[in-house]
Image: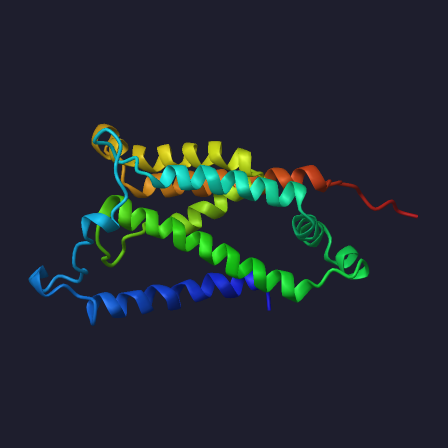
Length: 212
């Protein structure tokens, strides 16, 4: 089974598991029945800068981006991972273990996603509640695809996609467009990107059968 599809489907298991705890054991008794946890103590919050929505997590992201770039560029395991991604058959003939590396990378990627969620909760919202993420994980797939898995390019593309998401509020007020317009734009970007890859790697030839 394809690990991408299976992990995407497992997202719903994780979401409903978190919702169970928010609606049940973790619900704040003082929330008047609303499903949310108790506010995090100040020591567990990430500080904001200059009364904006930018918090300390941005430095974590920059440090991790540099560490990941170093890992893929200058370490042996990073080289093995790049070979696995480019051509699994070549990796098999070279003796690079496929299953072990895939499982380790899944755990590593999950840990990074958890850190991103921690930044969203501890930096901005201050408590957990249902639907605290409007689909950042799926947006990250588009970011990684646009950046061609280049950690340096990911920073720029992520900033662009973040500005697009924040600009959705302005689209609602100024142009009276629905908030879903930002997701439609993201989808169009991905479709055109994938279409460009197909156009670059495939040729369509039209010909007629010659009669004998």
